[in-house]
Image (cartoon, rainbow, N blue to C red):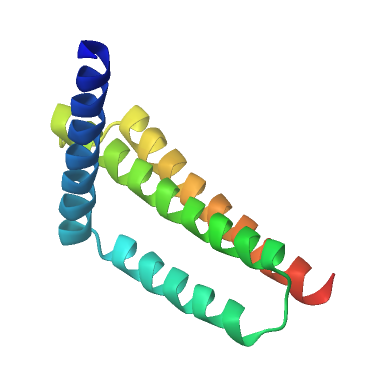
Length: 119
């Protein structure tokens, strides 16, 4: 029973910290807000276009992956900026790679949409 209570507390803390991370990112990152709007519109579009439940789930899941990538990109940028605000090739590479991850996730989500629409 003690183990179960510890797991419940750990789960609760994880939820609290995750929500704090979302709120902080939402407040400071316009791109997160933009991708969230794109996801809401995309999810609404899945209700207007005839498709199977599986296709709808795929589109929504890949859209959410864009948000995951954006949050990870934000984490990379903040960590790099914490270490130093100076221009450095490695800092640029880390930030560019994070941005590329968001771009690739968005392209993948777009491809999923196209495949669902046009088979």
